[in-house]
Length: 389
Ligand code: SAH
Image 1 (cartoon, helix red, strand yellow):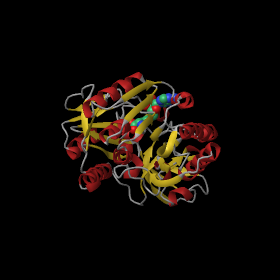
Image 2: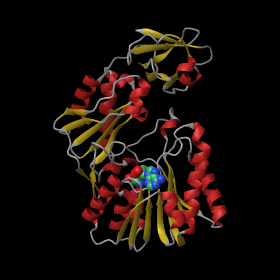
Image 3: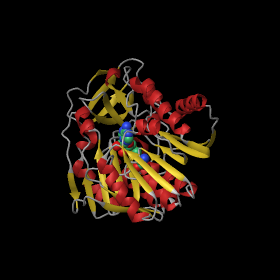
Image 4: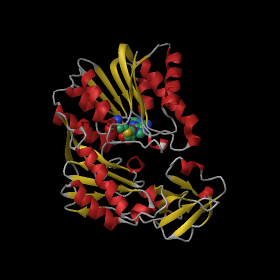
């Protein structure tokens, strides 16, 4: 096994069990290794810090899997997959759904591997050279651990480019999934397009917030900004909303949303707006009693933070102008760079500008199938607030 030797002083983050070794911290080694090989990571003084998978082309040069002195083998991945899947199966918080994230990358000690179960299909996404180099092992262990009849890999093209590996897509076992497969959350059902939809097809990470929306919706006029396939709008309709308005820029997403509303609450007064949500809230003159604001990640990099905070603030500010007295506003940032503290400040800025004092009545975040390792704070990417106007 090759050694990757760090520059002096660069072992500090590894002592805190942070799972990434950045290329700038490496003095020697790893560059000539083949993508995904196991490497031993050693401090400048020669102390063994742990073991991980090397990505010679990537800024994240090594993804650590084990902080010990003795080299682990691929069996470690199999054990962690089994543990992750078993934990979900025994989690009472996940009992009422058949759509669950089974493996959450670093959060489950498996950097580069995401597995989402949609009913009887597991959808896999690989984002590291280490995982891409072990497809056969992953197919075997996931097939046996997940107990579902089909496994399908969705390509992650940007990650493959970063990692210097070829993106791949297709069936791992069983039949390839249909264009629309149906999942269930409590009484709600959703058609999901795992072949072409966003992420692996659905925003599983918003499950807890959907539950909250269903409980709050009775009799309210609901605005679902950035609605995608109607996750929140369906929850609101099932919860007895007086009216739901969905705003989304993607036509395919809105088609799916229309289908989902029809399947769950066909009598709901629903309006589907294919438009830019920022522009929509500015021009809109209606009043709403429940507003969900769930934009895409506006700050993918640290450099985007200033622009992103302005955009988050703007959309909330205009939403507040549309909020009836006593309205609830559920708003989210899904950028790790705009975390809970900064997001609160952004919301406060909008509240001041709108001259609408707001109370925080709930803090929202990732559900229990999206665990975050304390060693890896970057894994906490979703921050949300439930605000009372
Ligand atoms: N709330 C959704 C997830 C939203 S993800 C759910 O729970 O399922 C963000 C969505 O915003 C994506 O569907 C994307 O297509 C859409 N989007 C991106 N930019 C937009 C814009 N400027 N106006 C409206 N929708 C936009």
